[in-house]
Image (cartoon, rainbow, N blue to C red; front, side, top):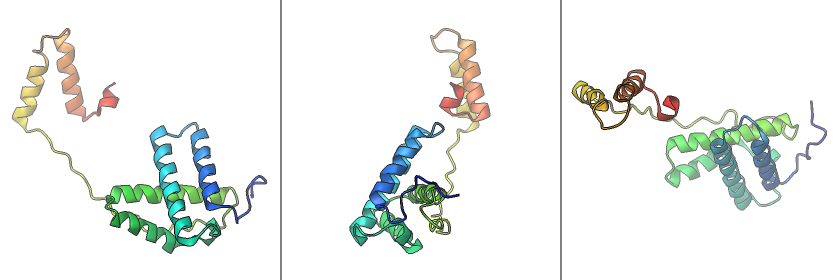
Amino acid sequence: MINADAKPIGSSILQLTVDYGSGLEKDENGNKHTVRAYTREVKEFSESLVKKCGEAYTVADISESDIIDHLEDLENAGLASASRARALSAIRTWFDSLARAGQLQRNVAKHVPTPTVPLHIPDILDVESTNAMVDAAGTFDLPWPARNRLIVELVYGCGLLNFELC
C-alpha cells in the first residue's frame, strides 16, 4: 500500500534524510544513541552522494555500487569494520523506510554484503586474581561487606554488565 502523504520518488535525497531523522526521533522504541548514529550515517551517505553526483540525483537513482563505493570510502578513511557495518545497517533501514512509504520500488541496500566484523574475545581473570577480587570485596571499609562480596560474585559468576547489575 502506498502512503498518500509520500513525497514523489524524485524527492531530494537531503530532504528525505532529514525526514528519516525526524521519523526516527518520533519512534518511541528508538534508543537515542542508535537514532543519533543512524541519522548521522544516513546524512553522511546522502551528503557524499549529492557531492559526488549532484543535487538532481534522487533516491531512485541510487544503486548498490553507490553504497559499496561509500563503504569503501569509509574503509579508506580508516573506519573499523564494525563502524562500516553500522553505516550499512543505517542505510538499509533508511531504504526500508522509503520502500514502506512508497517512495522506492525496492531496497537496493538489501543485497550489499555486510563488512565482516571480527569476533572480540574479552580478557578474563585467572583463578587466583578472581579469588583475590572476591575475597577483597568484603574487606573494604564500607557498609554491608557481605552485600559487596555478593555483588562481586554475582557480576563475575553471571558475566553481568554494569547496567545489568543496576
